Image 1 (cartoon, rainbow, N blue to C red):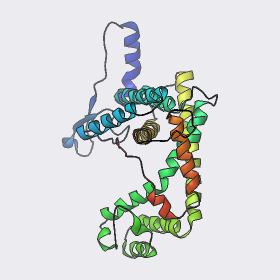
Image 2: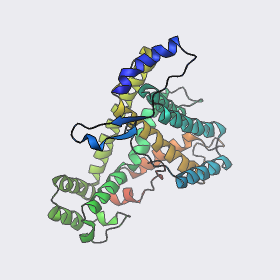
Image 3: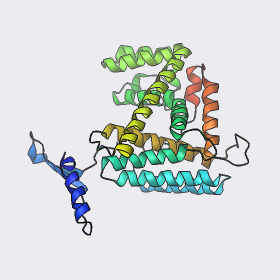
Length: 309
């Protein structure tokens, strides 16, 4: 709220007095009305982007991945796209203005999905390919989150063969134990919903198609906001959730591509080099091959390492 009030004044100050620097403090003091004694300083962009990990192990992991990619048979343009997306990820994270933050994440996403050799519009490629690469992990991501929820409510100790491999979810008895022993109605509903995935594989197809429709709708909404900012110089004060979605889309795509490129990868389209398009084609093929398969197949799929989240 404070930033909204002062930002326009700062714009005018900068226009008239551009030889001086006026910056917004990176932290703000938050004083609660109920317990003001517990006031504390927090980053001004606290929770805007969501939680992302940060430590030396992640740094070393990323450097190793980038070096592996650089030494592989990767196309130079694709390598540059990855580096550019990483740069815009940084500039988006560091920007205090919501509109600038939003645009930097969007540009990073565009760098990955655009094509110099294809007349297809970048927004069309984002809509088409992102929903496919994310749909590929959608089922397992939901089940793994459910798996962690069971541990949080301490049901893991009574479930036979409870393990991170998720194979215990390929058993009707597991879901019955959860329903009979949980006091949380939401957890019970989720158990019954995921049990349908195990019992009826066509329910998985329906869930993925619904997920793709939601992604398509959300990307269109983000693109509309992007156009309002770029073409109408719109000031958008309420786009916190949109920014967090966009940042997640960028980091998920970077995670997936860096994993794919750093492993020995085939030249899918036989053009003599490994490109980002090879990654998109490969994910599309895997998604098509798994359509209609039983839950066991979806659990076996390898997930990209979520280095940032």
